[in-house]
Image (cartoon, rainbow over all chains, first blue to last red; front, side, top):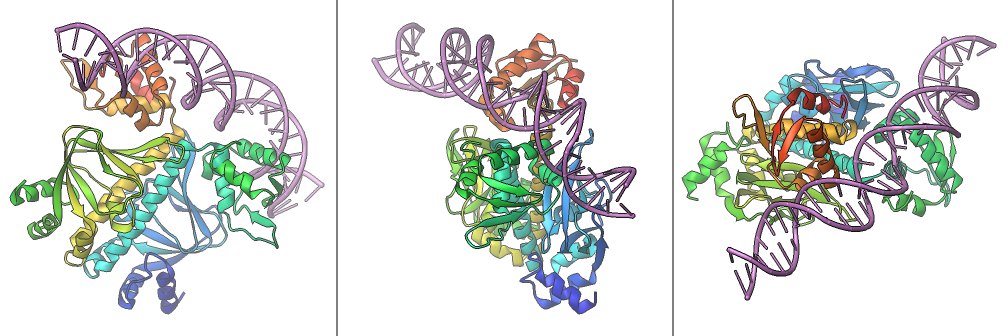
Length: 231
Length: 231
DNA sequence: CGTCATATTGATGGGCATCAATATATGTGG
DNA sequence: CCACATATATTGATGCCCATCAATATGACG
């Protein structure tokens, strides 16, 4: 990617949009693009922090693995999103893993140290970073709430309703953008439970399912499930 | 509180420690102290954001209430901590409630708008804010992990082991700093479950209990419970 | 077409919430 | 200071949700 293209790419990220040209150019100077295949680790938990990342194409899953080998997905970052800012800027080592979930996944890596030094040159960097971190914080608060207050069914229903719908006519089609086991991990449930929920909803005429494509027949019903008002 | 005392208080908060004198003085100019009794609401979810807060004395519980009346405690902020920065600086309305849990609880309220305008005058403000928000983010990630990966018993055991111990001799005494129902809410469990867990541990000789004061007899055992290696 | 990952379906059980009843603590006004 | 009212805590009974273990089934891909 040439330099001009890199600047355009950076300016397209919410984190950097709104920054003046020369600041973006300065950021570009400490940035390089990296390409990963599906399944490739971008960040390994415990490694020294070197950079944070913006997603140009593809998507990344951020997850923590605990001592007993279990994984907890914290976040899925698609095109246009940034991730690992907080860690890169304030911690010695990454506290989580990041893995590419599509091929190819193109990232821009912004080196931590040079970026930190830019803080002084343009206050807008601090401001935009604060906004980004705050948004992440709120998203996590939402996750905490979901985990502790909502049933597995409600979480799945929400996830389905949040998917971009390809409404054909008056019908409502959506497609799960990842393997079902990954969706399950994302929701903090097991693949078995996910399978059973979808089966039940099919039997009750709430939706039809074909692989990862599904048609929502009764969106109202699904919405009430999402509010935890009956499975 | 006179102006000099206010500045000293602010400088004692991690968010502002490390800032030059004149910056602290500028912050002090948009700050006022407020005192609350136990149970008084500091922030009401949905209200317009006016300020963020530092805790001078006492403590505050931050929680969300959902449509069905259930509460989820996100955070307990004791003396020296700040809270609501993210909301105050980036949102129109508070996304959570905050209630004083001690009498008296003394807070410093830093008005959002003037503070935001100070961003340009000193880059250190942005940097320190980024650090604070990052720390909060990591704490929340930890909470997510606990909620999804640890049993109620493990969470309670951790909470007990995290309490400041008043070790008398070679014995280990701790005191629960809030009502048990609040501790339960903090851990995302019901008071009944909390009560049963403590009862079981008493029966097994792990600890003894008298009101909110308890003596940990077998810290090793409790630590293994905290790691989810058996109830 | 065979191999491996992913998905489905069933059986089983445990953890923890819920509902309900009582006991204890806390605080208040007379 | 006591009696009462109210909040908090304990204990029991019950049941649901969802994880776990296990056994196919289906799909992806070289």
